[in-house]
Image (cartoon, rainbow, N blue to C red; front, side, top):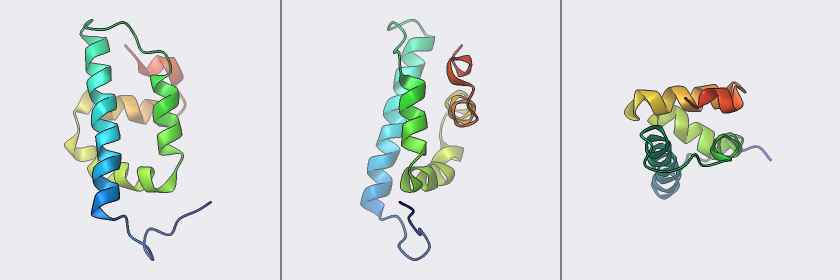
Length: 88
């Protein structure tokens, strides 16, 4: 299903929840990259799935400039279909 975010804008509550998904994913990625945890298999699929929905994608476009550059590049790589190549 498609969502018209112009006719029905993302609510602040939706935006906050969706941004928390991105913040959690960013923390996981940082933990993986610093060696604090073993690689989380499927993180790319999770991001791809999240971005496949219109509301999360709209929120990502809005909040991306405020996220860590490495995470934003990772998300963009996943979005472009780089898969595991998006990880270090």
